Image (tube, rainbow, N blue to C red; front, side):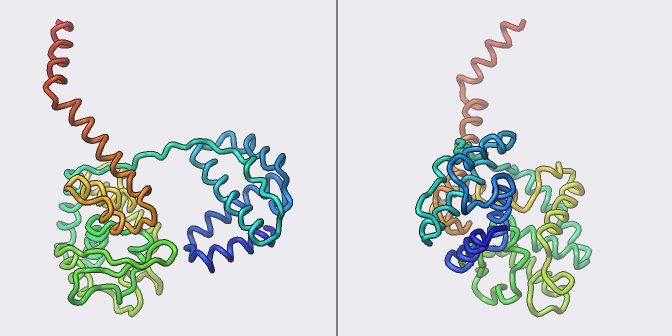
Length: 298
């Protein structure tokens, strides 16, 4: 990997406070492009344009992400005086339609909680921990990394809030429901004596991968499709169900820790899709059409 890429990543970490996962993603994109066309710092517009063919088998969203990484890289080179020109205008720019997030119904969420609450009645630490994790994922809308890396000091004593460090090191306060606070109390009573993390594991904290696996296993036990359940799906459910209940979009942005409200607006599309489906199913005109089709069938 070229020194220019290392300098760019160092800038992202130092000036923008980019998280480790973000830096790893940029590194993969830039390293991958460099393996295709050689030293990116010296690449001309024709070599950048050739990436269109090399990326032709990728999804539009993947191409858009890779192109974005390279555009930021070349902007950095120009700002630092490492190049006098910016060739990134010749990168492929597909219009990727942002997919709607997967949605869990209220009934599916209830089944998850029924299962985990039943298991937690045993008092076994693993079951009690799973209950606390689920309460915070669905009740507070935390990202997986935010949840597993929570320090023990983040647990509120009196105020019903958690202090969470999100993307880019930005801190925010998220509410803790009465249910979640009760679950946390049960977990603290059986939790291993480890001073640093709320959810410790092998001297560190619970990993994102392990959290993912635990949720999949819970879904199977609750007789739900495992492919429908993940930490991010529960975060989506938190946001979607709050919006359905009348939450303000700006409040939702704050709770989710979105820097840009355009990211939060995806949930208005989710709710709109639900409303369209409701009209198609329940509106009197829809019933009239159904009756006419039935008559023609007879």
